Length: 141
Ligand SMILES: Nc1ncnc2c1ncn2[C@@H]1O[C@H](COP(=O)(O)OP(=O)(O)OP(=O)(O)O)[C@@H](O)[C@H]1O
Ligand SMILES: [Mg+2]
Image 1 (cartoon, rainbow, N blue to C red):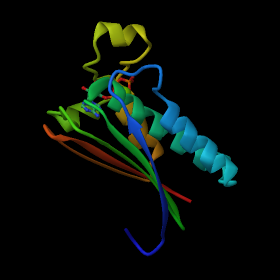
Image 2 (cartoon, rainbow, N blue to C red):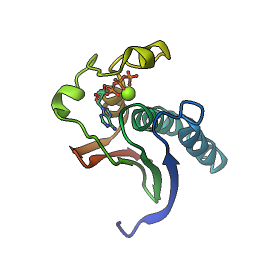
Image 3 (cartoon, rainbow, N blue to C red):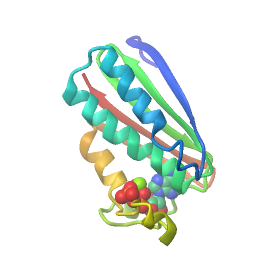
């Protein structure tokens, strides 16, 4: 953490819980709104944190979504406990999805979550192994 770090908000994300899915990212959105953060910044955080959260619900064994506030940026950190992404480059390709038919019926699985996280972030980092996936999305203020 750099000197400009202010505060971390953390949310536990449960695998396959489609009722709670989206609550972490919507809480982050409301928090930032109440802090008076610019709408354009909130939009980018809302989109990227939602996609990261849903990916934990759908594709992982569960994890956490963190929102780290700095003086000059907001960093969304998504971390889960596996099974990880075998081919990260392929997973970042628009339209690539391993979502099952039942998940597609719920409206997910277009293979656009990771590409959109990259598109709306100022810096995007992803590391994945069979132990889990960590994604860091930086949005500059
Ligand atoms: N946290 C994760 N753990 C394991 N695999 C993941 C994770 N996030 C993404 N993936 C893999 O990367 C693929 C692409 O992810 P992406 O979010 O782009 O698409 P999607 O979730 O399948 O569909 P969409 O996000 O459009 O609803 C997923 O189908 C899955 O195979
Ligand atoms: Mg997704």
